[in-house]
Length: 119
Picture 1: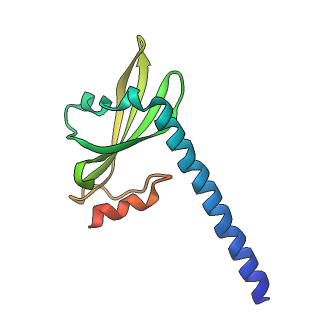
Picture 2: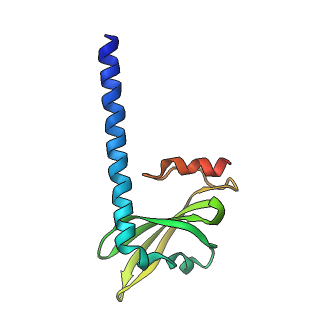
Picture 3: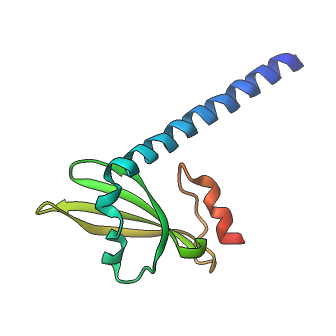
């Protein structure tokens, strides 16, 4: 019985890491392919400071979702963009986590980043 439990637990953990790895890989590929389009797009909010880095979570011909991590790992923000007249225009902004304590959500696949908010 103990061996069955260990096998099932191992399968569940392996499935988690495969799914997580594929999600990270998707973001890395999208960021590599389309990163230049969104490098400074966060400036459209007129409220976010410099960014440490960003990752593209989702991308289509008309919409994109980008995860920006603020300088010094002080916050994580997800910005949504829509394409208008061949340009990406900011349409929505959500702060996911922040060192100031104003947000403490989790973003997939970068689920461990919420820890920065508690540091």
